[in-house]
Amino acid sequence: MVKKFSFAALLLISAVSCYEGVSQMQPEQQIVAGLIEINSIPSGAGIFVNGRLSGYATPAKIPGLSEGDYEFLLRREFYKDTLLRVYLNKKDTLRLNIEYNKNPRMLGSISLKSNPSDAIISLDDSLLGKKTPVIVSGIIPGVHKVSYEKTGYWKTSKLIKVYSGLTANGEFALDDTTTWVTYTTLNSDIPTDDITCIGIDNNNHVWAGTTDKGLIWYDWKVWHIFNKENSFLPGNHVPCIKVNTDGKIWVGTDAGLAIIDNGLWEIFNSANTGMPLDYVSTLDVSQNGNALIGTKEGLVRLYYGRWILLGPNNSDVPNDWVSKVRFYSGDNQFWVSCVKYSLLQFDSRKWWRWGMKNTWDHSISSRGSPPNIWKTITSIDTDKQGNSFFGASYNETIYLFRNKSQSWAFELELGDNAIFDLFCDDQEYIWLSTRNGLIRYHLTKRPTIAFSPKNSGLKSYIISAVDQGSNSILWVGTSGGGITKYKAYQ
Image (cartoon, rainbow, N blue to C red):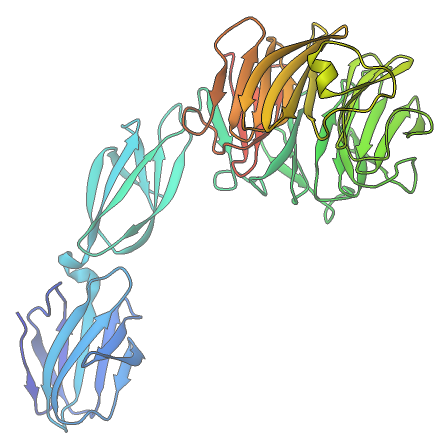
């Protein structure tokens, strides 16, 4: 119901609004003034005069109004509009005070639900003394922080928008921490959700590279961040990490190689080694501390303290972008994948070059023969049985194949996908990091399982890397979904 008022002198009015218009307003006292004052609690409501935005927001004084009928509409975010109609004599002065939150019809509600239910609820960091599911009324409109806690699940918080007279949806799923725990920028101190590589040290501490935020070290208590600004790390883009059995952490960056040994840093680049370029695209380290360092312009071998550039003059390695390197036995047997070549193998004394066709035909190519397909091998790893596994693309299809003692075998066809990394764990499972989730494969055990945000605690489909500690826990790096801890065998 809209009421119409005519004033000969100033009326001080305290009003509360309803959705359709204005509630009853009682004059409290008369004060001679000479202008219209409109105030609201909370303030910041935009004022419309006769349907037009006045340019004023509460609290405001609006002078120079002539005699006649006036319609004042107050509009504030999250609240229902408040409409006031008055008749104003030219000498009238009016003061209006709108207290939104004293009107129950201006308040909102939240439907608080969780999956699973029976979670403890906090609203704006204060315990409600209630558990899900429940509808909580009388909520002041605005943005509120809702948190759910339940034993065995990750504490989850979200910001919920509450509007006057409406019930907001506060339903969301809880992450089961008994099997999957995901760390993101929303629930931890990691600097980014874009992880490029993962390594686990002898203390089961996690080391992770990022796209542009440097190196992460998680000691199960604190997330430590190393970058160019606060450490000796040469570059903030970290494409590769290798944690060696002697405890040293090898970190490949876009500006050189760093080796961390009990807090001591050594930095290597094209200025103090045989590296042709500072950008380290891939690396691997043998148990004896010898290393292979791939760059965008060739391969460097660190062999008992000597830096050796492997190129066309002393090997079959071209001056090309080296995408993957992997030792498969000792210091003198390793695989090298280059962008323009399928696969290179060094077997103690001899180099072999593999192309897709001769791999499928199970025949060994002669030394120096050209590959049949470019840009083939995307990932390499070797299990404890001496099997080397390779992710390869051919005719826009991704395959997993295996080599042992120069005998090749198909293992898995993944269709239109991409394998970014391969990891062979201590349970003889092969974990494939792909753009469509994390795939677990076994040579004899079935079925093959694909994990994604739909059926696991992963927060991204794009998996960049997997590694495992001595406690059998798997750590998964993702692009856009942070780092996930997977208790696969507990």
